[in-house]
Length: 275
Image (cartoon, rainbow, N blue to C red; front, top):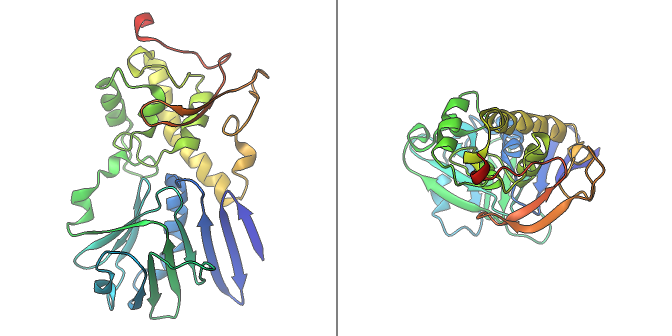
C-alpha cells in the first residue's frame, strides 16, 4: 500500500514499513515529531554499519547503541551514550526508512542490528558533545510538552520592532514554526505579516502565541492523516476563503525573506505609530 501527502510516503511490504519525506522545502516542527515517532523502533538498537558522504567523522557511530530519538524545532536528534547527532534537513533534505533513494548517496546511512536501515539525504549532520538538556531550550519548542507560552510573550515584548512574520519564524521564540505555519497562523488570527510586534494589542499578541502552538498540532494531525494541503487557507492559494478577496503574494517578506500569502481585507496591519 502506498500513501502520499505533503511530501510524505508510507509503504508496507510484507510487514516491513518503509517511510520517507521529500520536502522540496524546509520541514517544519510537526514533521520532525512524525519522524521521531516513525523511528522509535531504532531506540535500543546497535548500529552495525555506517555509510554516507558527510564530512563529519561518522565512522564513530559504528557499534553505538541509540539511547533516544528526540526533536527540537526543526532538528532531529539521535542520542548516544557520550554524544548526540543532530540532523537538520535544510531546504531539500529527506530520509528513508528501510529503503534507498534512487540515484542518491545518503549524507548519513545507518544499518542496525535487526537489519533495518535509516538513511538521511541532502541534510546537515553535526555532532553534539554536550548533554542535549544543556544545549536545547525545550520550553521554546511549540511541539514540546514543556512549551512555555509566557516565555514566548516575554521574548516578543522585548522585540517590539520585529515583524509578526519574522517573529513566528524566530526559532528562539517558536522553535519548529516554519513558513506554512507562519502564513496560516497570521491568517487565522487576522494579522497582516508586516505588523510590528510592539503594535499588536495584548489580545492579538496572545492569539499569536496560542495559535503558533495550536496550528502546529493541527498541522501534525492533518499531516498524519495525509490531508494537510487540503486544509491550507492561504498558503499557495490565490483567494481568501474568508472574504473572497484576491490574496497578496510576496516572494520575499521581512528579514527572513520567506514567501508570504495574506489577505489585505481581513488581516489588519498594525503599525507602531498606531499603537
